Image (tube, rainbow, N blue to C red):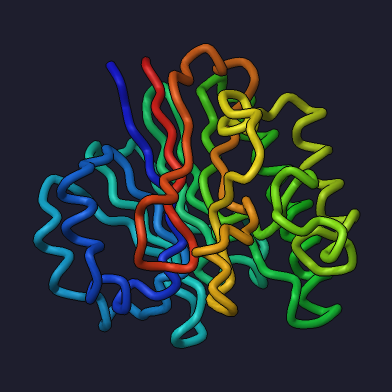
Length: 256
């Protein structure tokens, strides 16, 4: 049985719905759609989503209005759903949806951005550390663990168009990249890179200066899986042909 996953930072769900979001999902029909940065509260959920039939929706809203927020749309009902990782300062920003199934666990995570100031960079790094504990603990279930989302860090120089110019920019700082080194060292696999060694493949482009047209981008959206279940992974890609946000969707296909 093949199962398809999309992960997409939409940079405002209400805004992207006014574009071709509904038509795109209706045409592509992923079994799971992990959305980050919904930027809405429960009373603001767009009625247009009702056109996407066959999905159950799992929302995590930030306490702060117009900020963060995640949504997982699932074609299958989970055994369990969680919206927290056990630390209040992380659990109030709407960054986490976990759906657990018989054979796999899907995390939809909007990892923090550290560019605002040193305080937010510290917050991001502490979130990383706590989530690594969560990943490792859930791995003990023996199920496949899938971690989808906007990680807000490019791992290697190949993962952004201008690495030299961004060595001191949050999103490509050594201390942020070390966390990705750490999870890889512990047996977590970047599924896109597993299939695609080629350069110039990105998932985010600044709205400034025609960056997307010129492909001056960053690859900061990922599907990581545990090494033990890598043979279940059949494909992973970046859908840079899909417009509507400053990010594009990233995809994963598994066979179970």
